[in-house]
Length: 502
Image 1 (cartoon, rainbow, N blue to C red):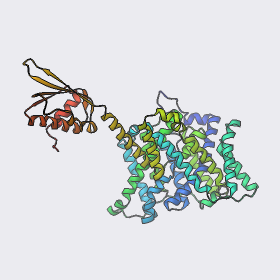
Image 2: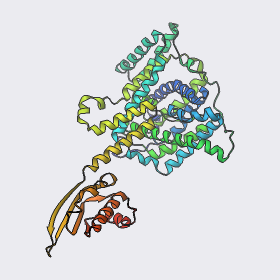
Image 3: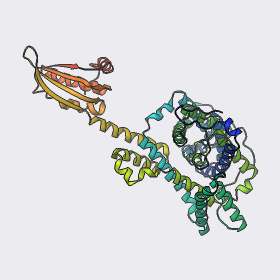
Image 4: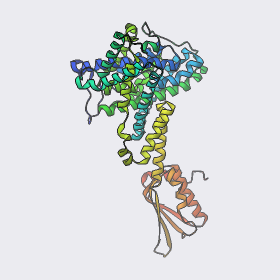
């Protein structure tokens, strides 16, 4: 288990280095324990969303975390059962049953591996920074919003315990940075509820914990085209949502740790982990951003050890110490997740000074990503909308940078020539207006279109140039196009005269 680092970035500690260093190993072990505790109520909640027994979500979190610790490309990132995947596969469970759900998870994992092979990870370069900022801010809002269910219709003592938990998480690092503050808060509040016999909602109230290990499971579904038609749409949606969330999370961790990770390996690793999860009867999953922030940002973990131990500790806790884990007050875990949401939110992005300096288009992209994500509770949809808004605004901005200047000259024979000098990038958004920039009736018989300071990017531009030429020819005038660079000349020569006119 090694890490791949970019030479210009600070290398993360390797697994071997962590195993040889008591300090690093302690950090990884304690981080894994905190994450495992935070995974339990989340996995149970996502199981309820998907319509399955709590153990299905818990086993999925165990198998995903352990498998991705070996297969993934981003060390220290946590993958487990998630709400996004639960929402995608819930209709399959509701309409066709558990076996079809598992078949969907298996097919979704295979699709993720295939997407990784064809290079889907490379598409990450097309996600603008403003979309990433919106993604992070929306994530923080969703993490906080998910805690509200545990803060409604509860005893007043719950609010006091949440406040105390937050105070411990904020203050304890000033006293001791060896033990993670979230772990201290969880242990302290659990001990208080037991000693003081305070009756507050706890983990056990979320659902029954399993009392046995996961076993090998093969879905009992007919291997027919009809089965494929049922599960394929959900499997594809699961694959896309899972890869998008995982790669965005990996990029976020890259930024936090100043290290580089293998996104292609992460993509196929997620797929392989889902296949493993499906064969153990799990509901599937992807990267968990909240738990990853606990692991990396709050607890300081940097290697695959923490991810592996998070899965192992989760299984040990729910199977071996289920009775004890069930006593953990939800207030303690809510306090942890509230602080995760506060730490995740990019507060700099919403400062008045930042908003004044930032171009309005960038702010629009960020806000649209946040708004759609929060309204749909789906990070994939929010990011998709954000990218589309960014592309639209970029195309609009670039289109306005195109200019056409006309001047008249005479040749050696005294004939007048109209030369149009075009500057800017010519593509569908800018070339559609190009047709209107010419004086077809007033120009002399010789017209030159100089494209030496522009570039032809697509068929729309070639079609516009053909339309301009055709209109001049109808008036008995000759058009000469000059200044094409090699790529533009090749595209114009290949498509000119071969595109239908409209």
